[in-house]
Image (cartoon, rainbow, N blue to C red):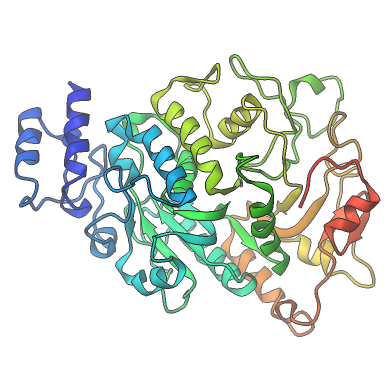
Length: 439
């Protein structure tokens, strides 16, 4: 049976290095059983959890043993290791998930790993990216290169890239990017019928970062103020408030606002949906180790297709949907103001404009009647959803031109709210004390 073969695969996963393993789901039961019996000496081609060939650079560069796995995460003495143990248990109780909870260091990044991670295998604070590089000159691999370039230029914090693809990102080089750690993990099986984007939640757990923020490959950091996000995350997400925080979305997805007739209204519906407790958030969550049990609880429910907190997860199709519904279901109330805008044109259209910075549209800025009647405050820190690498290159070159010079002497006001630019979020809050988000 498939469950029996899944258990064989999971048992094998604990004892055979990734690049010497063939999926039991692609073999007959008898052959799979023989594989388990001879796992320590079998030399087989790497295949994904559903038998997808994973050849070439991943096998060449992934370490032979995982950094983290269901069998290696123990209930340690620190608060963060205890929370990770709790999180892994929620997923590892289902043996089908065992191969998905392994992560492998790219051997070229051993020195970077020693620099970024402590002796306990944890990074203090980092940006975390998830990507699937499936071929040479992969678009998202190329975009991840630009993201890494921007982080190295404008952030003091490292970036951890978790690759769920079958090729190693060719453009990520440890000499060029000394503050980057590259990890490899298995993709979801096609037979699991789960969106690739749920790997974002796996990356939160596999990266072992105490304070982190999830960045998509089509994002780019374009302001040094972005580091405030990680500092503020540590302050806001605590034992008393253990939920991830997301930036407020430009869309109003609250079905109760259907009569407001605004252009940014797009109602979200799901079976047994909880009542929203805050505006819809965009799927760039930030977290601390306190958030990991929440992430694993809902990821485990989604992977098993079961109900969690009264919400059927089987028909929730994307990570953003699940995160929002989960936060509502558990009564979360904190949100970041927007810290990203679509594309990169805001640099020359809004921020670096003389003689005065130019307000973006619409006005009010993506308002709603319930939470943000004066519009959503925004920090122009990140560009997002820019799929053209040449346009990203243009934005980075723009910030290196004389007079801007990577913000060494010219740091423009990055915060905007209600038709006014501000230097700090404290100034935004003073101008509008009722604003519902924070930065």
